[in-house]
Each structure stands twice: as C-alpha cells, then as structure tokens.
Image (tube, rainbow, N blue to C red):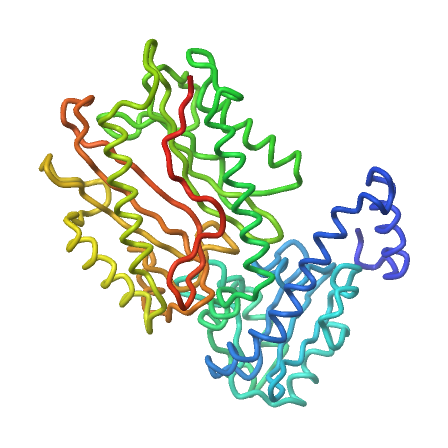
Length: 441
C-alpha cells in the first residue's frame, strides 16, 4: 500500500479487508488474537527486559534503521509497520524505563499495540538524538549473529549522514544487546514457544505414520510437502527450508526430501521447526518402517535408541545456569565421559563396537530455529562466552553412534532434539519429548 495513502484511510481499508476475509466476522478473528498476544509479549519485553539489556551493554540509545523493501530481522519483534522511505525504531535509556519512539513508520498493528511513547516523521530523528545526547548508540551490526546484523552498508552511511557530528562517531555494535533482549524470556514468551513446540511435535509424529506414508509408494518429498501443507492450513511458518525428511543407512544419510520412495526396513528421520507468533522451534523425530513379518523395531536399533536416551538423560541432569555457556558445556561433556560415552567430532564415529560415540550441540532457540542467545553448540563459538541464564530457551540436540548388528556392526547415528527452557532447577521440557522410535506398518 503506498506510503502516501492517508493513515486513517489505510486503517479503514485494512480493517475492512480483515473483516471480509475472516469467516464469521469478529467471532473468528484468529489474526487479531495472535496480534494481541504479540503485543503483550512486546510490552513485557520493552518493560522488563530491554532496560536491563541496555544497561548491561552500556548502550544509551538503540537505533534500528529500515527502509521500504529492506526490513531488519527484528521488524516483527518491534511491531511491524508501514515504511515508505527511511524509518527508525529508537530506544533511549530513561532511568528504570526505556523511552520508545518510531520515526517514519506507522500502521494499525504498530500504533494500536500501545507500546511506543511517540511517533513522528523520519526528519525528527536528528533533533530527538541531539536532545538526549547519547554517548553510545547501538546499531544492528554484528560479526557473529545474523539476526543482529540488519544494518546494511548503505543504511549505515545514511544514518551517519543524518546524525552528523558528533553522533555519527558514537555508533557501536548492538550485537550483544540484541542477543540479551531476544534471549531473556518472559513468561508469556515461554508459553507461546511451548505451544509452537507442541504443534511441531504433533505434525512431525503424524508425518511419520501410516496416515501419510504408504511403504513402496510415498516419497520423502511427499512427506515434506504434506508437512508444509499443514503449516499453510494453520497459518504457521518455518525458519528452515523444506522439512528434512531423510533416510539413514550404513553409509550415513542416503537421501533427504527427494523423490526417493520410502521402503520397508528404512530408518526415517525428520528435522524441522514450526513458526508461531514469531517463535521458531527446532526438533527431530525418528521412525522405522517395518519389514514384512516384523512386529516391532529390531532389537539392535532399539538398543541404539536407548543409548541416545541415556546421553540425553545425562545432558538434562547436567546443563544448568552458568557464568558462560562454555562452562555448562564443559561440565556436560565431562559428565558424558564419566558415564562411559566417547566424545567425537561431528559425523566421525570411532570403529570401537563397545562404545557409543557422542556429539552434542545444545543451541539457542526461540526466534529462529537456531536462536541468537547463549549456546553450548560447537557451531556457535562466540556465544559459548555468553552467560547461560535461567529462562534461556535451548534445543537439546545430540547424535549418538552405536554399533548395529543389522548393518554388519556399522554404527547407526541416532539424533535426538527437543526444545527446553533452562531454569534454576536445570533443563525443563516444554512439551512431550521424543521417547520412542515411531513405527510405520
């Protein structure tokens, strides 16, 4: 919708479109209910989390720059909004509270949410900054976290020109601020994320069943597209691409979400996540396709799965708040070794049939499938240095490699991954986690 269209007229048109497209009018306004939940989350984040995050990172003002067609990754979290030319979401330290302003953007969802103190034209930014005279101005430039790196080179140059001296030279990275703001969770966030997790589990477990799979007929991509259709039906999204529906064999992964037909004797895996209310899950499920005459999962596969459950039990009992995620990781790895497991590089198991080899990658989760908070995962080295606080959402991910007689003693990789919250008591699950190999008959 053109930015020059009058704001009031634009709101009337938007309201009319929403009303006309929702079955039953106001009685079926699921979109409104979701928006209201997002507004509550946003208000609590701005009131309870943002002031502390700004103080902890010595940021006096945080400016998020957007322009039409180039939205920052935080656009949804900050309330959306119509952007014509340039627009700025600005947060200024103001004692125990953070003053919130938007310049150059407007719209029903942004304004009616009620979490901003003022709205104005883009040209008002300079006077606003000069009146407050911030010493350190955070902007979304980040070396390690893509979700905190939304400021383009052109936007950075533009902001420097608009602010002028001396403020152009006071711009600093807001990477850690963004991480703290996003990963420090309120109760309403945890509740919404748990709901997303339950939806993820339900769809994945239905996908790995005879509701969807006919051995010898259904392909891996058939299953993946079925899952996407469920997202479309329910107004959901995913932060990943096609759901990873794959077959694991003696040589590793044989095919992922391709036209490979699912056959009897296949060991199937799903790795995916659901997007709901700006929260994105990351989880896995496993299924075995029975051969003719089989009535259950082969004993060797069941043993391998139980070894993976033992690994997860150790992780759940050990991961706890720590000054850094690396300290929590070191404790967890030591506990695994003490329990008789061997730590190995990713997908490089040993040939020793007497030991289960393990790779663990518990990582931040929440606003993307791979979140931007503290992480114990080997692929997030920078964030291993972040404090692991109570309230952090993590994906408890592991890979256990156990010798399987059905493959001539080759090791079968069993992946487990479910989402949890770290509390003062340790790891607590947010929905029923994977406790069995599903069976396709």
